[in-house]
Image 1 (cartoon, one colour):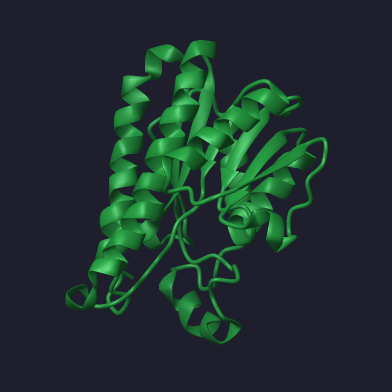
Image 2 (tube, rainbow, N blue to C red):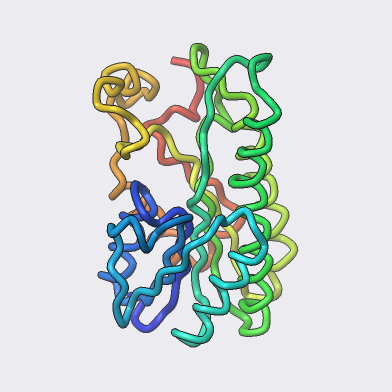
Length: 240
């Protein structure tokens, strides 16, 4: 599957984004991989199948360069994975203006600009798929994990996914999201894993490969759009 298709992956230098980049290449995709300093990170090696684009995804210019690179290097865009995101958990009254600015820049502007650029191209071609990585906390908050402002941004992405699925249904462009639980990435220190696994009914933390599998499923599931697919060990199902 995916032979000679092109994907853009944001937040690609580590964690879920790195896993997605690697898997998509294995499935025959050409990938344009982005993070602020992805060329310095050394985790993704540029090749005939992989182009690296440095830059803050919260800036419109970075979004333009990502799409321009996909079109000029690989001829188009079939898949956009909005993976870049930040998560700042703290009590609601302790969020600072800087916290808010950072969350809005990466989580919202980092979705808006690159998705606009990609969808303009996809609409002209009459085909394309956008997958956005959000959080299960947007549907089911957890006592003891205060994260209201990250949820404000990620919940908005879930809502926008549904709205865009309807807006572009007749243009051949699909939009889906993945409501992720706690995933084993460098974001979570090993000494926190014991606590984190208790946040899911299935008492473990998720694997990057499980998010990858969900993205690949949604990309091939051509009758699925507007969906938030929860990959969270059952956490969205409610209190347990």
